[in-house]
Length: 174
Image (tube, rainbow, N blue to C red):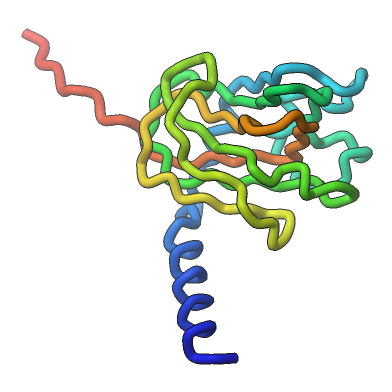
């Protein structure tokens, strides 16, 4: 391995590790309400809420992944019910088949219900089932995963969201 390759790899590792949630951090998505543009199957299969159930199983047929119908602009989102400063979003991708479907998806954070929020990150590589993105305290109530550039299936086996509450102004009571 060349020195340049080693330095690039070390830098990437440092960026990823600097973005991991602190020990004991609360996954805000678990408190939220998930929705998506459509649902692929019935019963417990494919529901939007499956992506925030705490189960990171990457096999869609085990019932813990959200999955939509093939569409022109596929999306999934979680409403956190309050505005937070989002530091980290971790996506667990489907691995029993077709993980490449997630390539090009955007993670958006903001206060607009219509998914038209600023982009925190874009999925450009699939190293394994877990994809970690640093969002640098972007403020928002809605975290969405949107496939903006092409029709595609969207399957998410888990979405974790970590952040800090927004400090509310101190009010003095008289």
